[in-house]
Length: 195
Image 1: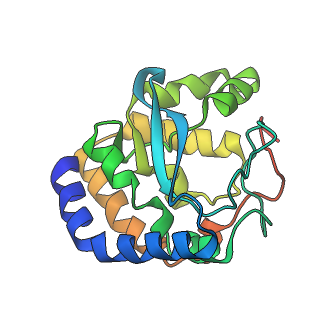
Image 2: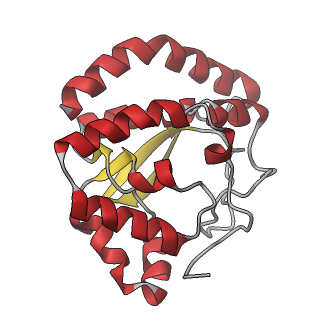
């Protein structure tokens, strides 16, 4: 199902992806695609793909930093594609590659997994299933929901997993695409732990 839906969406969204790629390139001549190491099922590392929404070398200090509200690193083009979720479209190729599914816990960066696991040992259980483009935490929480609360959403999804639940969450994802709050960054630059 993942492969069929991904192929269909790539065909349908290809004009949008082309326009987004041109806008990003014309804005600052920088790379169009941004890739980052994330973890999926079993803790396996892979490169997630997104349209670049931040300035080139946004993490030049070499430290992993979450996007913050009104983050100055986000370009004007980036702000628009984030609001419309266009920046996530290249992840359809991650689904085709088998690194991700449509529904599942969002793939996290190794640095943050290590940090969160210090205060939340249960965090590793998120990787019992394949990472997803959308997930229970994204639909029933918000971008700035605390990591501990997001973890509870993710673990609930894993425990209650069914094909019907996946279909329901994919339908609900269409609604969340038009909700501004879910595209906003966290209030602080790095969040970890239960508070």
